[in-house]
Length: 177
Image (cartoon, rainbow, N blue to C red; front, top):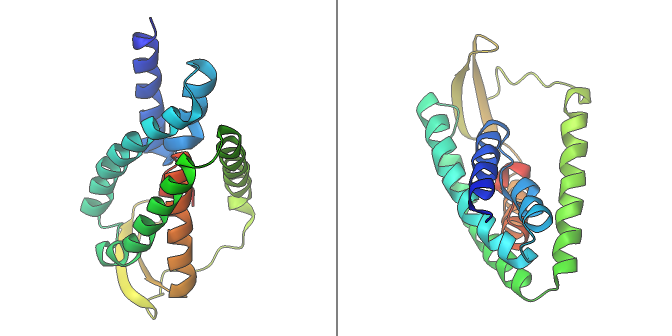
């Protein structure tokens, strides 16, 4: 009954997610709960493998292009993993209303930052290699090498852990954070 529409919806959302890095809970969970009438806990659990698959595929592209810093990723990943375990434990122990509220709040925050993105003062990152894990990649849009590094490690670890909690709780990927 719902197999073909569900398949086509997930295919479309997966494609959009690869493009905008927002496949998980921001689109799939509302789609499954509102359109296909899945219980929210099932929708969250269903979205997580999609987030993982999308992350693996897009990460491969970013790694081969040189845009991703594997050392930096491996440094912050444990905090995200611990956060996702905590988020999963929270998710199975709270009502669906709490999950909807957290998901809605994360959607509003994501929309706000996407809207504000062009309004923030641009920082010249072309000569930044003084922090931890310095790296560089060629940016085709800028037609220049971009040098970057990681600053303020404790807040980065905290954001990574919060990203994991959010992912484990409502099924969104880390790209939202």
